[in-house]
Image (cartoon, rainbow, N blue to C red):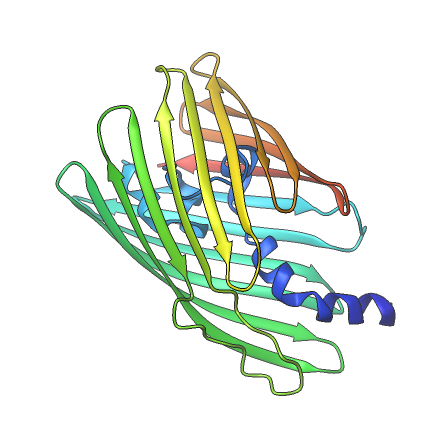
Length: 266
């Protein structure tokens, strides 16, 4: 366990970003959250919540199969009113010896029919046994532009001011990331999305995903990302006001990470 804790601590900057939970739909599409509208866009480009017409909430659970102890729990909620949207999110990742949590509050606004802008403030907390608790704060700035009925472009930057955790014992940074993407409705049933993301001081990652709505009730999804290379798959069920989404991520080093989310549109 001590060795495992040391590894987690040394890899923390990677894990803080990698465990940013985008929900099963966006995850199954290759973690494409830059230009896809969804309630879970709160965890990526908050401007993506501006397509939500009714108050919506969703809870999510991820089981990380490389360790029986590690899991992720998350909750998102969005309230639309006219051309304004407010959202709240919570996420916890880890186990009894080590855990990260994040609470966020977002505001997004539509300017006409095409442009949306957003701001999300996040409060981070990190707890490590024998090291204590450390906190930090970051912001996410996002934009979404619907070019026409087929193409949508999006971009967001996380932690542009390069904020760090308050702990002095361990050098831990809140990652600064830059993300741009596009989505394309190939038909009324097929959505294709791609994005390019860059974590400061790390390699550029490129991802591609698809959402195929077979019938109104059922959608199938899949995706790939390059660095590190990962494969994604999942499906969604939409029955009246209830939303059920499932996905799994496969990483050659960490194995599978299945997840499930249950949502409700009031």
